[in-house]
Every structure is written in C-alpha cells, then in structure tokens.
Image 1 (spheres, one colour):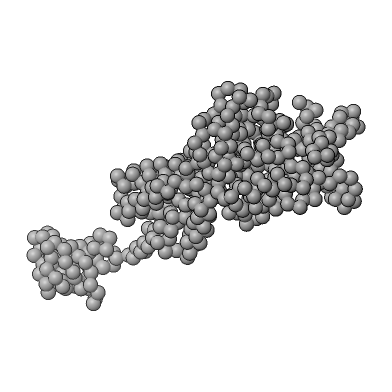
Image 2: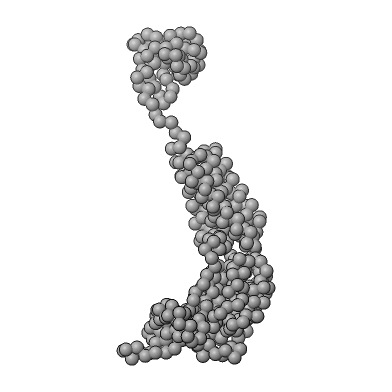
Length: 423
C-alpha cells in the first residue's frame, strides 16, 4: 500500500513537471489526453467529447466521466465518434461513489479499454437517455448481472463484467496501468518504473498527461445539471422575485433572481422533468407568499412546505439515474421556509417602516374636534388633522374645544377643555 501511494504521488508530480518539456521537444510517443466531465451528460458536453475525439493528436484519449447518465440530446454521434476514433480510447468510471448509468454505461462497452474505481456503480444501460424502467441493484455476482436493467458495484478483486478490464482507485493509476497495452497495433507508452535514491521503485509518467474540461460557460450552465441543483436555483430565483416585489430594493435581489432562474431554466430544459412536480413547487411558493401577505402562518404554509418537499424529491422522471439528493432538497425547503418566516418580514419592515417622531410635546395643547367622538374621531391642532380618542362619557361633538392629555403611538388621547384638570 505504501509503495502504491508513493507511485501515485510520483506519477502526478512527474507528469506535471515533464509535460512542458516533452511537449516542447516533440520527442517520444504522443501525450495522453484525459477528458473530464462531471454530472449528467447533455448535448453540449457530448458535442465537447466528440470534438476531443475527432482528429485528436494524442497517443490515447481517456474519458473520465463521473456521470449518472445522459440527461438529454442525441447520443448517437458520441457513440459513433468513439467507434470511429483515429486514436485508442479508454474510459475510467471513478472515483469511489461514481455512478455510470444509461448511455454512460454503454460507453464502457464501446471504448477500447474500460476501467473503474472500486465502489463505483455501473448499469441500467438499456435506458440510454433520461431514465427507463430499471429493475434494481444486482444481488448476485456482477458477472451474472443483467447490466441493461440492473446496476452492479465494481470490486477490486472481481468478478466484474467483461467490459471492466482494469480496476484502479485513481485516474492516475488507471493511466499508468495502460502502459504496454496494444490497441489496434498501437502499443501504449504511458508510464515507466524508476528507482529512487533510497532504492524505492516508483512509477512515473513517460509522456505528458493533459486534462481537458468543457469551457467555462458550459461549466457555469452545468451548475444546475443535477436535479437538486435545478431545484435550488428554481426555489431561490422565485423566492427572490417575491422578495423584490415586497422589498423594492436597489435591484440586487432581482439580478440574482434572474441569474438563478436562468440556471434553473437550463436544468428544466435539459433534465427529464416531472412537470407535475415543477407545478407543485410553484404552488408551494405561492402559498408561502399568500401566507406572508396575510401576515400569518397557517395551513397554507404547512401545505406549501409539503408541496415543496414532494416536488423536489420527485423533480425528474429518471430515477435512479437522476434521483435528487434527498438531503439537499430538505435543506432547500428549510431555507425557503426560514426565509419567508424571518428574513422577509424583517427586511420588509425595515424597508417600509416610518421613523418614530416624538409627539410628547403635543400633550397639553388645545385644538378643536372636527368630528364627533364615539370614542374615536379627528381633531385639528395648529391646522393639522390628527386621529384621536376620548372616553365615551366625554360626549365630544364636532366643534368642541379639546385638550391633548396623552399620546399612544400615532393616536392622541383627548378630553374636553378643562376636564383634564378636574378631580
């Protein structure tokens, strides 16, 4: 185990250090290109992979896909590009915990060499795009699994399906394990064993290893490529829209809402959505806004919470390939509920509250009742009209002189002139 760890460290460090020099000299075999994509594949990422496979000058193209499946789009050009690639192709499903389902699992059967990390799950290949009718996880040895309708876990010591030829815990060790393998009359040269000063044998790269990813904008869009991401941005965007309607701020919340809804829209357009669940999320947020408008918490808020929770957990129709992470959905629902319960009220009150103006100086001032009091009415003080209240027995009528005897908020307490000093 110590030797494998040393080998891995040396492999990575040596690969980074040797890449510029070897690339400049142009000597030796070509580089290894590792194409990295995380999350469900969509048309943009499939086109990106096709572009890397077409006309590549690398010695070997390795697909490193941590992807539960293909969310949408046409995968046939990708499958065709893998089969027609002018250079050897390999694929590694990892790291531990990775799921490669549907069309991504099918890629393992199309590349020249397939491998994975121990603990990664592969299967459900019949559901090429966005779901299907899987029957569950395999309860027998992986070799006997029906990989079209079941999933299996890759194990270090096997047995594994025939497609999985190499089991290594890291992409670096997978690339090193390809050294010396012959594919279509091409013998791969990816690593070499050297002896360190202390006599320890370590594995280092013998060629540059380039890691490539989709462009920055594509990676930005893919923030919402998982169901829980789409749910987060949808709830956040709509909540901030409601906030902006009430708070009428400088527009920062509105800008964030537009950005969130843009990302949510990409997820909605890409993932296989359950539109009934999307509608449940919208209704749940409307109920929150309705309860906030009524300045109370009741059955509407409780029903809104249930709709948000149910909608988030069933947001897509591609379970288990694109099943939302339940803990992420719960956290989003709790955050939305707390936001409406505390943040909305506090911010709106501070935004629209009127500063308290001292009115104690009005006590003792005299004015005239503009209306009869029963027990409230209107008085005029120095030409200003004020709401006021008096004791019912005072019998104040319109035109009677009154005197201010107290102030309660914005309401004046008055009595007939002279009555305040009576005992």
